Length: 277
Image 1 (tube, rainbow, N blue to C red):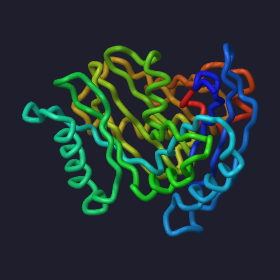
Image 2 (cartoon, one colour; image 1 turned 180 degrees about the horizontal axis):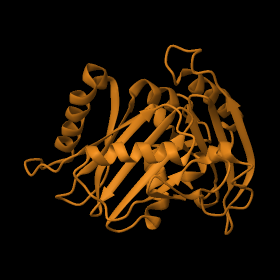
Image 3 (cartoon, rainbow, N blue to C red; image 1 turned 135 degrees about the vertical axis):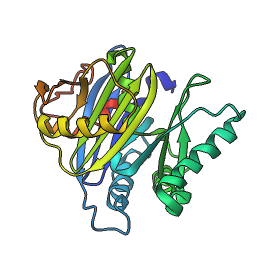
Image 4 (spheres, one colour; image 1 turned 180 degrees about the vertical axis):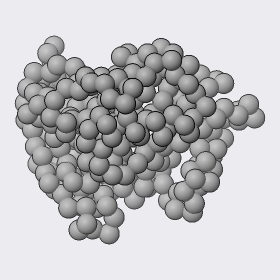
């Protein structure tokens, strides 16, 4: 079967749930099935263990299905670092080594057990690097044994899938992107068209007033002074599309592009998965 016509599975992996949307390919892609599996992050040796086990069980029913699988990892499971440009770096291996060094400097020896990836970018510009527990990546790959028809095509952190989906909506010069999940928030600033800072924080941030305080603190930590105080927000659990002002900041809610079978309000548990569309 041509890959063009293989169905897709968009999957999000978070501490409290695994969400799966099956998308039928064609001239008008549409969601044909949905599944959400609750998880207990306290039940395993790692906070991702319950979600990884639930993923493995859920994918058993797709092993003989010709589907391409993309997995989006919650920001609970990813760490980020903006790696400054270094003119002495001349190869991809050296770039990766520099990114690993930055994570080790920030997080210590535990970072040596992380799978580190560094994003593309123009020479002379900072790069965004991501790090995920290597054991989680191995657990995900183990869900796809050889000779089965279901294929893993991508594993990507939520920040990257969201940025790729909505980069066209971000201001060319300066833009804030805020991603809100249960017990986790990720705030990124692109200044002058380049990655400037990324900050992840644990805790509940349920309302624009909480977001404004977070932005005020982050603004004090960065050298960049964006001309706009507009923030793009993806916060599915707010239960409505956000367009509100608070604390001198203007928040504009992000919603995935329309897709047949996806209802933004009713399908909030799928909201992170479909950022990979």
